[in-house]
Amino acid sequence: MSAAPDPDAEVQRRTARSVADLVGAGLIAPAAASGLDAVAERYAVAVTPSMQALIDPTDQDDPIARQFVPDLRELDGRPEERADPIGDDAHSPVEGIVHRYPDRALLKLVHVCAVYCRFCFRRETVGPQGSGMLSPEALDAALGYVRARPELWEIIVTGGDPLVLSPRRLAEVVDAIAAIKHVRVLRWHTRLPVVAPERVTGELVHALRRFGGASYVAVHANHPREFTREAREACARLADAGIALVSQSVLLKGVNDDVETLAALMRAFVEARVKPYYLHQGDLAPGTSHLRTTVAEGRALAAALRGRVSGLCQPHYVLDIPGGHGKATIAPDAMAPDGSAVVDWRGATHAYPPGPAD
Image 1 (tube, helix red, strand yellow):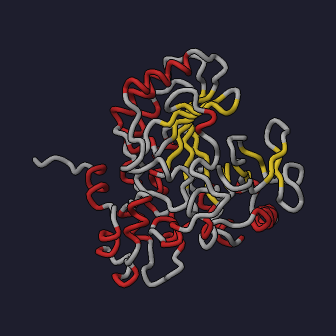
Image 2: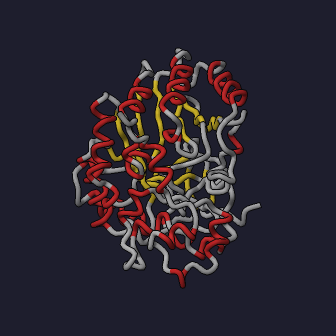
């Protein structure tokens, strides 16, 4: 009797990882490929079979393609853009940890993803050319930092996409964090249920459930078409296991910057048992200006959403303040009327956008 196919291996085998792969898949016209190798050399490329299947190659403005297919405009930097747009490095006391807020910290477990978004705020560090996975020694040091700080109530496991790790490896990490008794909430940030739903196996779900406290998965999606039948089933496997699901999306020009698409996306989350949580203003990552909306446009969309869809479908529209100052809800009491300044969680005011990066 032959062995069952390995979903991880099959997805990885069929994932497009170069301009040539995308041309071969019919997602880039050969005549349009000129120059894109320079983009792919600087910023990682990966488009899973599930996302390839959603792209309409006849639509030059396809919203799925805009998220994953490289664009020459990515080589056009702006003075306000910066390699570390949300200031992770300023709050990283040891490798793999970002401790920006009093009661929670990020654990950046791995620096690879199943797909690479063209707007990624960590695009300078993720991918095959990036920082890779935390070494065993670095992971031990990161967990030691958490153990020594009883104020850390929540650990947010991110990257990269931590769910690309094998269930065995995930189980080891979960067990190590579960042994730290003051950590009561474990949250995972991932795109996997949407971009590679077949990889959300029972074994993976079981690994996440090993944590004795509250387990959350933040599912990243930006367009309602991403919620295929397979994606909804992957979310159901997590929800049925008692894992709470919340959403995160990025407001993107040409992808979801109209109220009809945004409303459909938030309804799709709720129908998949994912509570809308964050709608991010696009970060000032290098080469992403063609995908960023203005704050004024985003605020108008958020206001229109409030009047159009259920309260269950309302995300927090937030900005990660450049320089490491944390998230701010982009509400009238948190931002100047003209969008020129934003107030952080400590009450300090910061210019937005900031001046040219150092």
